[in-house]
Image (tube, rainbow, N blue to C red; front, side, top):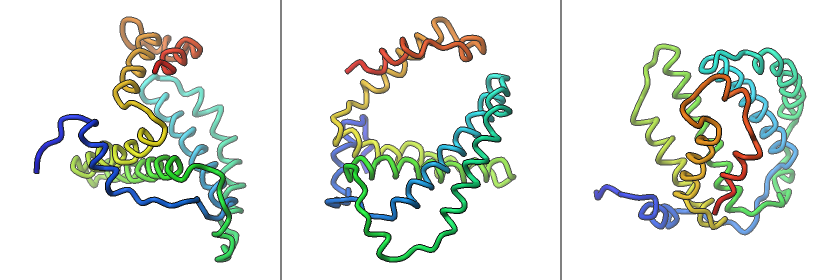
Length: 191
């Protein structure tokens, strides 16, 4: 096999294996609940990240109780019985955007499993992490980029420019906690 040298080479090869559907149909109540749960869990994990890397436990202590309350509500919805006809609800979203986003979310779940394995003594599987983080997530990015007319390299450039706004010289806990979100957003909007 030939090694790819750019995302530009990767994208058309990835898109040839894409599954196309005309409309997204599923149980909208369950889907919404699961996405709300995912947001709640990632907010708590973001609090852990900030505690570990920035020495700032504020988000972890202040936001966790609210997220737990959200998760309790979601659990009630998840426990509801699913009827086959409930899976026929049309979800008002572009199917390719849905595919790209839900795919990245589920691949992130697989990365959660890889991290769990690493911290519970099972070791870090670099091959699996590469498959999920750069391979499979890249595949879903290819769909999103194609559908939304996004440029992978412009996105990477914008993130670097955003980080230059946030950290003009280098990382600091103070700058991480005191961000100029408007200036950062302007860098992200460059096309």
